[in-house]
Each structure stands twice: as structure tokens, then as C-alpha cells.
Amino acid sequence: MMLEELRKEVWRCNLELPKNGLVKMTNGNVSGRDPESNLVVIKPSGYRYEDLTSQDLVVVDLKGNVVEGSLSPSTDTATHLYVYRQRADVFGIAHTHSPYASSFAALGRPIPPCLTASAMLGGEVPLGGYAAVGDEAIGEEIVKSIGRSLAIIMQNHGVFTIGSSASVATKMAVEVEEIAKTTHLAIQIGEPIVLTQPQIAEMAHLYTHLYGQG
Ligand SMILES: [Zn+2]
Image 1 (cartoon, rainbow, N blue to C red):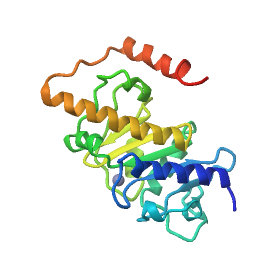
Image 2: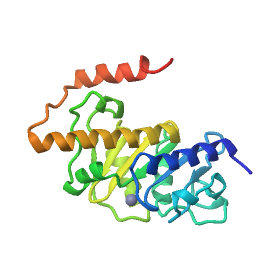
Image 3: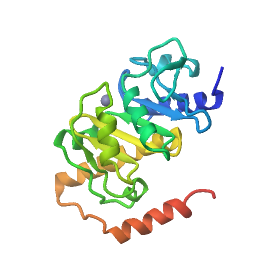
Image 4: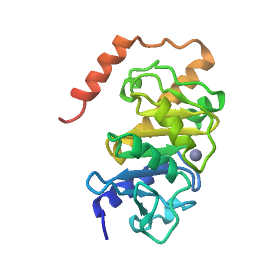
């Protein structure tokens, strides 16, 4: 078996989605790209998380050819692969229809940066235009509209997050839902205060350089 460690990481990340209330049933997926071979490990299509083992994950090349695995890869595979091909800095992608983030998708609105945690994602979570599921159209929209953000709201659909690993992308999927929830609640009772660019930059510096155990 190839890519044993990446398989384990991507498997753990996929299980984080239902654990954190981001997905129901078979929705959602996480993938990770191996920096050496450029092979991508991704969740199989329509597969229940409680049944998923690391060996069920599908390994594909950047063109979408299945290299390893007997199951069909996620229907979002073309989207993931498009982003990996266009963004050499991305090694992990997560996709969910988490409800609060997706409420912004339903409205076709970006998530304004009203919380210090927003800096972790790069400030405002941008909006990508409507695109049909199943081919590269979503990937094109993501690459066009995500900029330097680690998350993007896809109109009428859900949320995609990217990162330097599958674990980072998964963490961002949790963060974006938390931020979306608080912002959504704030909008119910008033007008949220949007952070300034210098405030976001200051917080981003803290998250990048000071936060955690070094
Ligand atoms: Zn979706």
C-alpha cells in the first residue's frame, strides 16, 4: 500500500467532519495531496463515515485516474484536482455543506470579517459564483475567487477550504462554520462591526507566529 501516512491523515480528517457536526449522512469530503508523488487521497463517493476505513480511500493522480482503490472517488474529485493543479501551495482540501456557512451560500453573500478568528482564514470569506457539481466548473470558480483566503463560500452550495495539509483544511472547515454561526446570529440582532485590514493583519500575524506550542 502506498501513501500509508497520508491515508491515515485523510481518513482522520474525514471523520472530523461528522464529529464536528459539519456533515450529515454521506455529504462532504476531505482530500490530501502527497508532495512527492502529487497523488491525491480522497473519500470514496457516497460512502458513510461510520463505515469508512483508511483503506477505503481512493488514490488518484492529478488527471483523475484511479491509481489505488476499488471504490469510485468522490463526485467532487474533479473540483479538488483542478484546485491542486492550479495551486502548487495547496496540499489539502475539505468540502462541506455545513449549515451556517451554507446559509451565506444560499444568500450569495461572502462572510464579513467581524471576529478575530476571521484572520485565521485570511479575513473576509469570499463568495464564488454558482457552478454545477461534478466537473471542473466549481474548481475554476474556487481558483478565480478564493484569493489568499483559506475558505470560500460557493453560491447556492456550501463551503470549500484549502490548506498546506488535509489537517489544516479540515481545521479551517471547522473554523469557518464557527465564524459563520456567530456572524449569522449577530446579523439577526444588528449590524456586525467589520474589522479593519490592519486589525486583520495583526491577528493573522499572531495566528501565524505566536499561537500554539511553537
Ligand atoms: Zn457539495
